[in-house]
Length: 144
Image (cartoon, rainbow, N blue to C red; front, side, top):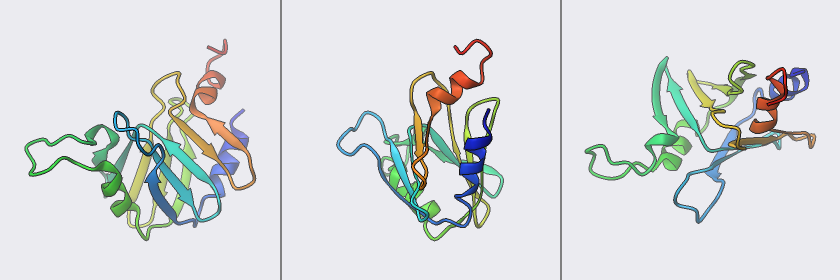
């Protein structure tokens, strides 16, 4: 059922990525857009960085201050983390519907699928697309 998605994700290997605001002008929720050098594009709302085996910054940190001198700009931080990195592996978690993209220098981007709403969307260079809410339906026996 997920073979096509997994095959498409494998095409991201060796791609670099540019990170931008996927929904400019909307301040309530940060949507990031990742444009891969192969022509694919991922838009995601909920994500976190894992670096050297430790959880780092996440989308949930965006615009929080946590006692720091300034609010966290999660978009800028994600841009810094993924700058000059290449994809070494991209996987789909069949249990959760999450995406896990491994980059060079031991950096991972985990994209969460936590609701029935469309919170991530990926369009591959060949024109095929997948949405988080469709993946969620496919993994339940009754389609719910």
